[in-house]
Length: 329
Image (cartoon, rainbow, N blue to C red):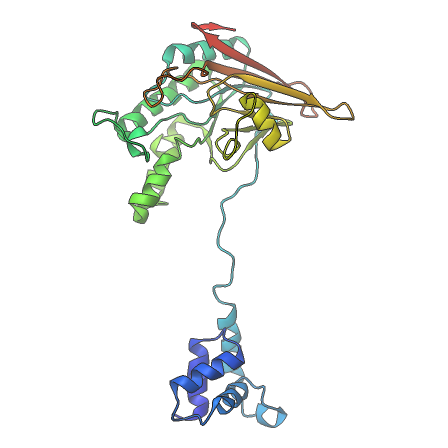
């Protein structure tokens, strides 16, 4: 092959290399053909149409265009998750917020109390703010051989979602928690070939199409008026030793926010120098107060919240309730 043919072939294989480096590698590959690096560099410039006007008429325009096309191939940024805030539609004015059921370790009696309270308050939607399911057997932690299998948890999860739907007859927004995320994490770590298959996405395992609920991935937050709602695992990540979870969430978010995840009912309210009031809330759980992984825990409590919008500007009120001895406080 002639020098120009070798240079074209090399550039098609390595279209993004700068001329000087390309010349050095071309000389190394065809040492007997090119007398030195400058010789190789001239030929690279020649086939690119950059070796003077006298040589440009001999250059193939189609080759130059092909080379430019190769330079820009695969340069598009990688696809990212849609992390835009999920806006709860304005038609909804009052929400029952529950979280941390950790099915199949849920407390059905506590759930019934929350649903009854929501019904009496005429809520028009339910926000499941993460950790609907526990998925202990597919976590990174040890689990007992007799722990409920994933498929068993999924079946109970579908029954609970249907139960909530029938009890209140309203829209359900299911915000994925870190425990719910274990399905995707397990696939990534153990079976990456199956990751992304619609049939084994959590929302489809839970029969979203039949039951009818909106699914919001863990990495996003929800907005209900001027209140941000998040499960909380990203909020509490890192150094987190506040007076209470709500205070810590307020410091991290610097905005009105309601979280679950911490299994504790708490509230923190502040006003700024202009008198604008902002607040943060954490809700209790609807699972056992004595989980096997931490049976001596002392600060957890059952609970839920009802959030109502009070005007068209997004102002809201939070009715954050504890359940103590199966009584709403």
